[in-house]
Length: 206
Image (cartoon, rainbow, N blue to C red; front, side, top):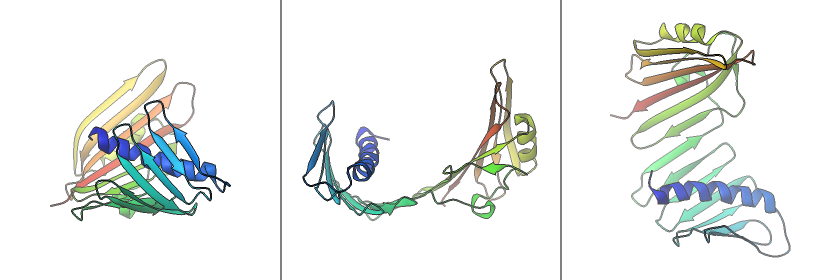
């Protein structure tokens, strides 16, 4: 990711936060960052303009639930708290969905008895491919989690286990039958009774 692309992501998040925090005011609010960045929000909180330290600009309109945004490179964003979509000047679209996913969408079963971590779902669809991630929690040991997922892969590439005084962790990488790459990470701090699982599936478009 280039600097400007990174800035655009930061400004997107900043813009949303500004709209939520400012709400309805009687006059325009301007926030200036340490490097000369500026975010100005209209008095009613529905319009915003952000200027980065190198002059890059993003303008946005929102009603607290939905937003539309345009940057100075012609990329258009639109979305809400469940996700957003970006279309660049060449018509290429990236979609980010955080509303949740099921086993069929992910392409992997959820670990038996595990709890889905709230707001951990991320489904990113780009012209190059789709990347999905999900967080789960279980009381089982990390190594047991990885052993379960070994049996669900068409090809298991690498497995790594670590057991120290501070934490236990296990990691597995491999592939599904459709060629998607999979990463399974299971970690448990020594003072915790819960193992945190992160499942990641990446499918490249042909």
